[in-house]
Length: 297
Ligand code: ADP
Ligand code: MG
Picture (cartoon, rainbow, N blue to C red):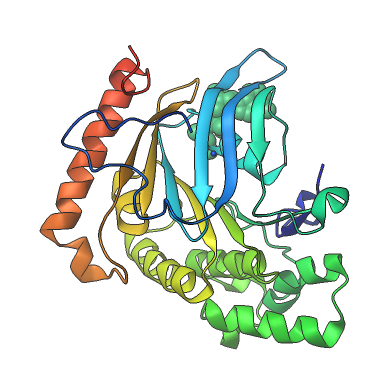
């Protein structure tokens, strides 16, 4: 298994079908990003677990440089499975994954350069925020002074500079998640994978973190794959939404959220936001009803 640079080392307690938007009420898929290079491509990916559960079946997806893509689907449809496959934490049982945009060590090094943020912040309880965020750099053997500089910058980015010496128990849920995001970003990975990171937070905190995440994404310029089961969150954040079918997960359709960034609370209350939420919600309902990808009967 390849080493993952940021925040996913469990032992230290720290997803293209030919997607067809055949329904004319949907915006065409993949236009704004069509020119940028693919970061990761999943072709006909299947994942069957040892107990026989088929989680993903012919899952096709191309993620391009600089995109903010949400995987939207019901609980149990294989979103986390897809993310783990992309991260190299688990191997597909069929199909292929090309990670041309995230291999740092080249083929021989086989190390992926991915930041992973889980739903639980998974911070080391006995270590300060600073030490928690430092961990991925320590694991990479980054020289101490350079590492401290990068941790300081990561904490500033997520608004936790003044809590560097606090322990996780002293932080609110939102602040713990900020620390977890800082830890994932500290190695400056080109691809950030986020698995329902804000699902456990209250709505106001979630909105704030949504805004801050968008600010970070624009400032840092990395590619984000964001897993959520919330239509509203996916529309607010994403440049593209991949709507998945119930298990076994496949791509039902893709929606382009062709609304400009920066997005703020004005966007959240705009008619365009409501319109995109309606389209995404209808797509999700149809995915739940018939399950087969659009254009395939
Ligand atoms: P989601 O993240 O969309 O809620 P998951 O990717 O976690 O869904 O899971 C997809 C399906 O695969 C579910 O039915 C889940 O129970 C099953 N599953 C996930 N991990 C395993 C595993 N390690 N072994 C067996 N089944 C699993
Ligand atoms: Mg999940």
